[in-house]
Length: 453
Image 1 (cartoon, one colour):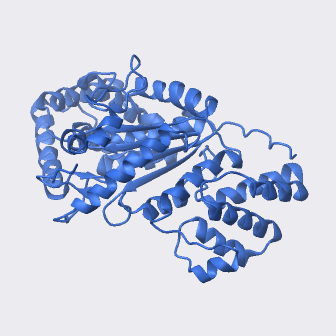
Image 2: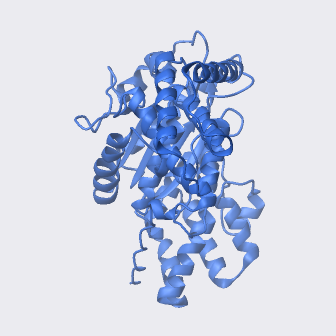
Image 3: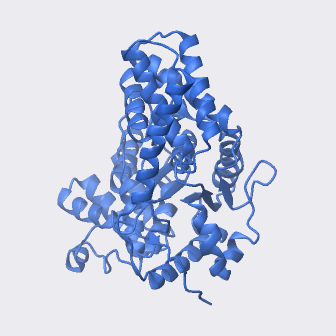
């Protein structure tokens, strides 16, 4: 029996990790498009803490790490309501729990949910270890296996690492070919046979590998749509064997596309079948130590879900909303947050101002900053923008912070502030009207979907 690798120290998440370059990247990304930063989300997060507490205590801690179970949750929000932002927050929480995460955008061309291979490939290529200040990001299943091998060699020696790899050959994974590929890859890495390691690494990432190439390593199937979800199950079953607490898969529905398929009925039906299967696998704990969050628009629950009774039964009818008093509900509603709209914008604005101060070693008058923030939040809330008021507010506030920092710091009048709001509102509305199409798992929604049995 091999000795366990010493537990990894938890990454640091706190104000001291935000260096000036990271702060500037946060402001650049949020100011240009209103989207959340991939790293450092905790510094600008507000209003969803109650959801995050439930996710961490009831799911990551109790269900995943303790009971070794699994769960599937929908995250619902309109355009600009913070779906991607929330998924990034959950990712940060999962990293603190020493879990691997994969953030995947489900899109019609690159990753539609009715193509299991595309989903597996995206997860296998994007699954990553916790990111910590001062550390290097590491992403991709093959590189994570290499990391585990390097740690075992360093702590236990080469012979023990070989014994651990040999032991994987007896681990129960859904796809035997996946298990054989992992074992073969591990042995090739330890033997420094890079040609074999590259070939098997590509197979594990779901890349195009011919059957002839696979047979050279004793594999008699290649990744495809017929085995894609079986490989996904095998991947998450492997994660605890690599020394991590579990997996969090964050699937984000791409809301924007330029063209729409006129007849997606077959693809939508296939997608629903795959989604039912995924929910059932979570219910049977065949995806051990795994939490799956999928972000959708309200169009899914309002227009798609009622058309598929079998799926509706699994998610509940009427659908239940997750909260502290109902932690097992299937849906997280990002329109119902901890703070009312104006207070939420004020909290976000203060956090962004603090990031700006740190990014540029800037010491503005608190009175001037707060007065502009109060006025902007009041006007945005009063206007009650129909789409993405939070994203809209973030873009405009970062722009105002730049003006205060680079120009003459002054408090804008109500008329000047309202003019800025109206100009930005027209721009955002035009962007949404031109590009926004509701989709469900990468399939554009029909205006009048065909009912299925």
